[in-house]
Amino acid sequence: MPVLAVENLSVGMTGRSGGLVPVLENLSFTLDKGKTIALVGESGCGKSMTALAIMGLLAEGFVVTGGRILLDGEDLLTARPKRLRSLRGDAMSMVFQEPMTALNPLYTVGDQIAEVLYYHRRLSRKDAAEQAVEFLKAVQIPAAAQRAKAYPHQMSGGMRQRVMIAMALACKPKLLIADEPTTALDVTVQAQIFDLLAKLQDETETAIVLITHDLGAVAELADDIAVLYAGRCIETGPAKELAASPRHPYTSGLLGCVPHLTVGVAKPAQWHDLGEIPGMVPSLGQRGPDCAFLARCANATDVCRSRPQPPLGAIAPGHTVSCWRAQEIAA
Image (cartoon, rainbow, N blue to C red; front, top):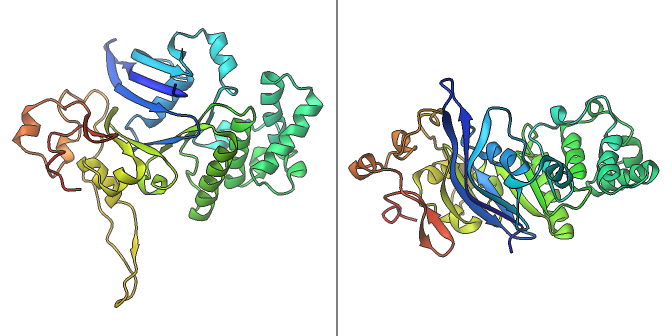
């Protein structure tokens, strides 16, 4: 049984006229113990909305309109609020996108980690505080005992992100959702955070949902990738295969936006020109039954314009894509 199974998840937003505007449409994926799936796409594609739906933290005005979210076989969408509170921070946890706003500025970081252990593990205040220091050491924060007494504003962005990871992993959850865990961090710290997540996953076998817009950054870290666009999943597959042989034009465009350096034997190393995806993700309310990427796609034909967007179809074992021209697009 997978740790997490998202089945045909749909989320709507209450519109000005009172109706529901689709935000997520029929999203499905599974995640096994000790594995990582990366949800990839531009801002506005539904990645964070998926995470909030899983955690039961949708804002007012957003509602799940269909599907199931199973954590170890338990449907989170039918769980009572008290049950969800007991699961959050324990069986499932989340590293939020901006640690400066996610951490409470009025409490020390040590107290915030200890609170998780006090609430879910029923440790004494003293034992919880000692364990908080150990978790700060586990995420490689130097002088952990002193840093535990610091407030969030007294720490760098990279350290705050490590504190968030320590807090999320304190109860050794079955599922960890990391929403853009390296936002606004320099590339060196980004690499350290990804390495840290991989190391801690090896030790705890936690299943990780990694949310990012950077397809290149997760090609090595993730086991599987699901590419989201305009609230729909348009391509899924093993990370290495999908990165090497994308079949949806949007996935190819995302890969083309990743800087890469070619080192030649007979000529100096040179940077390739960055690719560009013209246009923008369609806003809510502007998404019809046709392919949401149609207006930005250079490969669109009359077939694409005359038919609704196709469902995900298998083109290789474990590799699915939602595109009428998937079989024609060269790997």
